[in-house]
Amino acid sequence: MLTVHHLNDSRSQRILWLLEELEVPYEIKKYQRLPTLLAPPELLAVSSLGKAPVITDGEVNLAESGAIIEYIMRKYGKGKLAQPEEGTQAALDDLYYLHYAEGTLMPIFVLGFICNIVPERAPWFMRWFLNMIFGQLRAQIVEPEVKKNINMIESHLSKRDWLAGGSEPTSADFLMSYPMEIADLYKLGGPVTHAYVKRMQARPAYKRALERGGEYSYAKL
Ligand SMILES: N[C@@H](CCC(=O)N[C@@H](CS)C(=O)NCC(=O)O)C(=O)O
Image (cartoon, rainbow, N blue to C red; front, side, top):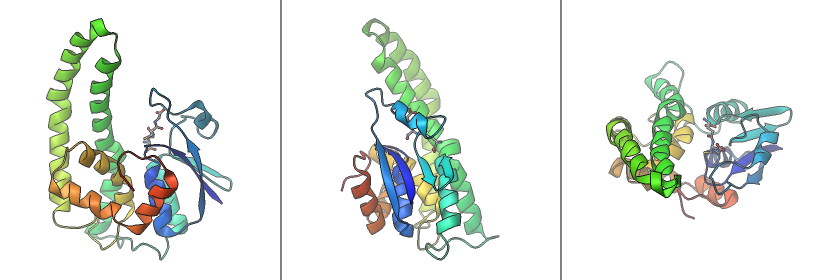
C-alpha cells in the first residue's frame, strides 16, 4: 500500500487531500516538527533531504510535492478527477500553476518567514538591529512581491473556481492549496483567495484528509 510520510502542519497535507479525492488506499506515517520547526531526523531515513512530503509506493520512494502529485495523477488519476485536455489553455494554466507554486510563490513566503524568525530567535541585544535589517528586506522585497503575486492569482481566479477553469480541482490546485491557505490565514489575499480556500476546504475529500492527517494549523475540522 502507498505510504505518505507526513509532517504536521506541512506541505504533505495536500498529498493526503489528493489521495482522498482519488480514493486511493494509503497509510500515513506521521512525523512531528521539532521546536525549531524543522523535521525530525527520522525523515532522513526515507529521503536524503529529510523533508516532507515523501511517498513510498512499492519500490518507489519519491520526494518533492510536485513530483509526487504528478506521479499519483499519472498512476491513479485516470478517470477520477477530470483533467484538462492536452493543447488547451486550461492545460497550460494547470502546467503553469503546478510549477509556479513551489518555483515562485513558496520561496517568497519562505523569505517572509525568515525575515520574521531571524530577529525573533536572535539574542536580545541583536534584535533591534536585525529587526531593522530584516524589516527593510520585508518592506522592499517581500511585501511588494507578495502583492504582485497575489494580484496575479486573484485576477486569474476571479473568473474561475479552479485554476484550470474546470468544475473540479486539477494538479495545480493540489500544489497551490498550501500557499493559498497560508495567504488566507495571514490575510495576504482578499475575498477571491478566501473563497478559493473555502471552496477547497468544503470538499468532503479535503475534510477526510484533514481528519486523517491530524494537526494542521491552516484549516480547522
Ligand atoms: N519543494 C519541496 C519543499 C519541501 C519542504 O521544505 N517541506 C517542509 C514542510 S512544509 C519541511 O519538510 N520542512 C522541515 C525541514 O526543512 O526540516 C516540496 O514541495 O516537497
